[in-house]
Length: 563
Image (cartoon, rainbow, N blue to C red; front, side, top):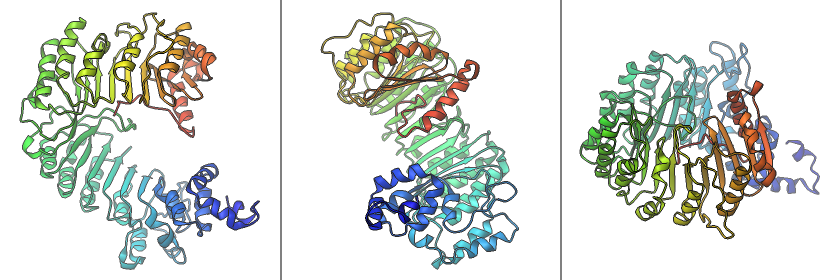
């Protein structure tokens, strides 16, 4: 990177500087040279304009990278340590602040920080000295608005946060491996005095944390501007619910099921004992919770929440016939203005009669006239689709995202691929569509002028039974009915994914089953197959995720909920 500035191939170095002032060019160059050169380049290229510097430093994924601009990063005891407690390095580090232009050129540009504390050992005294050295004791990152912090072991991450910024409005903290409950409680108590402007709070941890309810409750009560909160699993105690209600303006409540589920679309759970005192949650716009159908009926029988627009229910225990329809009817009566609804109705028990399933689930939902996003997870969800596409299009004219997915592909019935054509006709403006589609062999549905999705951006299909020549027919049909640039994901199983894009069709398959898709590759584009060691599909999936994450325009998805 630096040689571009010292030995330019252009007539004048100024031309090079002007080219690198263009954020798009600059971003591509920095992507090629890596983070280390990014830091070195930023130290040297102080003549770059504000637009270019803003583009580089708005979002930062490494606190070490930031502090390299202030002083040397030194390794202590094998760790990538900035400053180790109780050493002379503290004084050396704080003195290195003198003569740098960090605060004038870079600090104020950082808006978002994603900080992983693994392998780092911080001395709070260092940050106290940095803080004291600033005019007016201003924070290290004065304009920082968003922080995501991953705290390992007993790192004093919360202590460091106090010196980063006072203006944070979004805080996401993950307490990871070996963070003990007493340490987490102490951290929460400390953070109760940090960033009072926080309106969006996400807390994650790996263990049941009943013993920190008091600390978390106090923290939540101190955040008077809190509007959106995501809590760990099992945070369903009355102290927490009372604290949430005390904010008075809460708009979204949800919870992380597991810390390992890193996708933002992961299923979220609050706990089966959670309840809704509606008077304290009258401004609530979104809720995602876990309950038995009987518990859900009890919640839906309470006073309605007038502002509620999104509801995700993850059913706990068997989904039995006697309680299913009363639950759906109570839901519809409780929140008639829903725009975003997700129902996880696994595992289903009882009837497999399609008319009965439609009567229990689909018919009541057709009364929700304002739906824009709908997801139903049910082993026989295809029964809700067959012969009902027109009724759904009339009932939900605003629908832009629709997902009918089965839980166990072996339990789901076969169906005809012509259903996809019906969706293209009746939901031509839909943006995201996901359906479990087990082909019965009838793929002779390609017309000379087939219907076309006009606004489709993503199409998720579970098509695990397609093979051989059916693959070619499917690919041909998709190339005709999908607009250019649409992302198409084929789910072979939970750990198997394929992705195609209509411009330069790329086909990626993993595991031993991936070979059956070679016919698609031969018909429409390039083929990339990943097979794990000894054909182990889980290893293959891991390789697949790592490979895709390194692609410049990754289409990889965790097969998310449509949201």
